[in-house]
Image 1 (cartoon, one colour):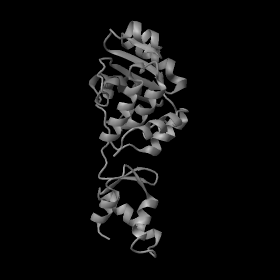
Image 2 (cartoon, one colour):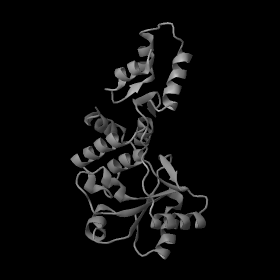
Image 3 (cartoon, helix red, strand yellow):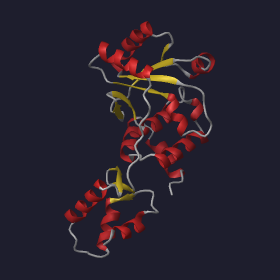
Image 4 (tube, helix red, strand yellow):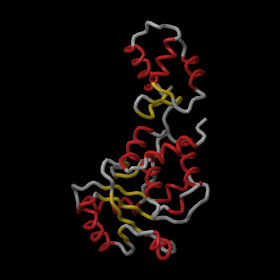
Amino acid sequence: MKIEHLLEEFNHRAVFTTKDVRDFYFKNDKEMPNSTINWRIYQLVQSGIISRVGRGKFIVGSSSDFKPRIGRKESSIAKQIKKQFPFIEFCIWKTDVIREFSLHQSFINFIVVEIERDSMEAVYHFLKEKHKKVYLKPDKNIIENYLLELKNIIVVQNLISEAPLQKLSKIPTVTVEKILVDLICGKALFYYYQGYELHNIFQRAFEKYTINESKLLRYADRRKKKAEVLKLIKAINRH
């Protein structure tokens, strides 16, 4: 069966599964072995005709990966942390990366440094010696009343274990899956991205990038927000 027929079958679907592909091939050849179908799926992924977006889940077309920009200051902070604490797990990112998904543009811009729990306070005190405006897990009141007018803010907070991260230029940073879940969980730090704006962010993220749903839901489950994430995924228009 030609690839054009496969594209006609799945082009209109937001996501399709391995079972859907098997059923598609079984229409013409009910005796086709699973090993052959799995090999064809592998070839389709390798050629960029379809992309894997989770365990046994696919979309039509090549993947579009989210790669947040790492600025000079973030890079410098990351190097300082690596030198002083070479064995800890951390990630660093800047909240302005959310703007590309947001309908209402916010001018709030923090550098977020997330550190494994046991080392968080040590890293906070270390950074406070080297930088002027470093805050440890600020609550909504502090953010609203003190931090909004300031620039070059560094926020230090706990890194959830098994969080989905990526390395860009050897610097550990966030994935789009992590950002989406953290926006739901971090109602203090991200209070200005709640309500319908959160719906817009999910909508635009799914439109612009290839989202690994398995990774997204695994992290959401770890943060006890799986039901909320599933509700948002179902609510957005993915066609």
